[in-house]
Amino acid sequence: MSTEESLQFAPPTLDEQERMVEAMLFSSTEPLSAEAMEKRMPTGSNAAEVLRRLERHYEGRGVALIRVAGKWAFRTASDLGFLLRSEETATKKLSRAAVETLSIIAYHQPVTRAEIEEVRGVAVSRGTLDLLLDMEWIRLGRRRESPGRPVTFVTTEGFLDHFGLDSTRDLPGLDELKAAGLLDAQPKGGFAVRDAPEEDEDDDTPEDDQADLF
Image (cartoon, rainbow, N blue to C red; front, side):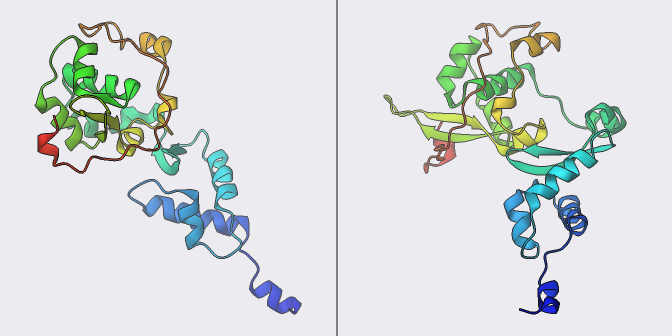
């Protein structure tokens, strides 16, 4: 191959690749993986390296490049959240029951409805679980291999995205929750925060109709 032909097929410079990755991330409505972006880029591109460069470039700026469930997205800098207060006030706050239920699922997943009730010390209403399912913060996991084969609940990528987490291993620990005042009022069952759960790669959603599951 001649020098002219080699130049013709040379990969774009890193600066050019940065512009491509920025364009894809800013126009996407959901986080994107490095692999997905690289497939759209010219041969020889290195999306992973470009993402590392962009992550450093946006440090301390009004927007930050963060990992969400193993993918990448631009988000408003955490210390500038007060600027979005008008949008936040329009969002309906979760009830205490919903917050406690979501917390138990996040820290103890996969977990059944009976196990949630055991931790809370009170019954979990169908409406609370329906609300979290409708918000797409939780989903149905695989069934327990126990009598009755009860369905389990696990968190979703939408949950990780909303709270800016790369994985459930990034959930705050006991000391952080206490410092934030989130454990001042304990659930009646004595909700205990344990280490963040390991990622479950085999959480197949049951095939049964959702209405008959819990």
